[in-house]
Length: 510
Image (cartoon, rainbow, N blue to C red; front, side, top):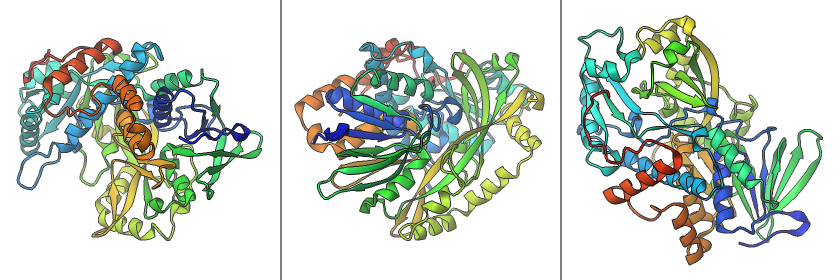
């Protein structure tokens, strides 16, 4: 990596102080300790947008319970490919976090990760048939060993009393459960990672600073114009490498970079709200993340779930999220974010994506127009005995789904995450949302291959990455020994339940 220390300029600039920048920063510092890194954040604290605990689901997304990761094909079979990929990526996240604990870089894993069972719950003959097929398909793979299935009301009531009590005993229902599931406070984790980074004199944090523009000179260096939002003072930082991990704010900055790879990308913002339980007696009766099926046309972040959370040591119970629409790209953004992002290069993909996703538009209109009673009725699908007085409505985070050009469709709306980088590897941006934070480690490994290809080929970097992530470079699809070893090691380091020897079977509710 070319050094750029003239005038105190850094080797690396990370835009946005969230989980993605924190993960990349720690990895780079471990791989090359002499790097000078600057972090630029427009808010006055780190992890205050998408990484904040109240602004995301907090689910350790491992595809155990998220039904949208296992679509049913036209022939009736279950497509497990995305679920397998995400489950393997979360294994890598656990390994990286365990490494940081083992090295003493961060402490007290219970501050950011807890064992919470992941449950999929469905109703009706068609959905029950789908869930059983899904269970049978996933449990062929070692990553999903330990998954349990049941259609028995009595057993399900022991497992999740709030979900089953008050329900018609003749109703056709089913659930799967994975005791290996986790609840993750990505805000707490992000703050731990940055505390570790900021102990290095060579890592500097610029809070309340906004990137106004960036451009690349003929030598390949990036000139980043930043403004101190407290003093209005402006200055320029020069660096050979920029990572834009600013959540919904990444797209406008990527467009300003002017790199050819940014053309054709657009963004569709989706906001969210939670119902948060205020009754401690109810909170204590539920211990699971219970995910259902998404409504037709809804984005993945809107999959309904009755969700045990542990935030700052306090147990909570949430339901939602209810989707909404705002033209802001960030919770603390501007209503002009969406209009300002429309360019000649992306207007066609955005229009065509809108035409192809009319059900999503209808869904969002329905969500925005919901009354308080409508929200409680939605909650009662998962908690039949719910009463409005026990729940408060709170605003969740803002997500920007990726729109990209497509040869056949003109434009498509993507619901995953995507790294966009320049051909020379000097700049990269992360766009999109789910599964996002849970797979930050795998996403950053991919970024390292794209932007630091020569370094990644060296024995030194390969050896260090192998230490950080022992399963790196190996397939987890059919490697029972590796999965068990990883599960035991990470459970011990992260103080999680070790369920690596649990067998798949019928769900007992115990």
